[in-house]
Length: 228
Image (tube, rainbow, N blue to C red):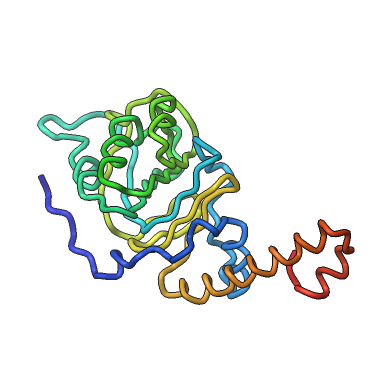
């Protein structure tokens, strides 16, 4: 089996403290605030379970369509290698170019991912075995649901390199966050600033909600906190 590339220590950076208080919309707003307006994946990417949140460090793989299986070649080699190498807090990001033929994710990969303690998966390809995946309570975000095996239709070509998934460039180690509203990617270089803005906005929203529930007018609350 081919050896996987070695990573810088940045990929293993800890997850943000209090990440469970975050949500994709506030991270998207924080990214907008610093001029990164293209970090939300296509709205076609949906969670298998809207009750689950996902936050982790990207581990990437890129697929291409194929029309046959090469004799003597294990089409799953790199797919198996990256899943077996997942660490706690990793998110598998499988870029399929929006192919309608590739379903790279199913119950066996999900079971192995859960056993590794990884945070979940995002793919712009299809997923299958969805009832089993939901039972695992593993956050999985997908571009569609289909019974297709990737074997003979698509094959992973490389892992742990920058990819474009659902319209967003993802670099290994980037922070990937998903919830019921969708998936956003926070580049590591901007992570500290984005998180500062996001947590400040969450604090402002808590104050806003409390005053709105007490009967305050939206215009007054917005003027006071600048949050909408």
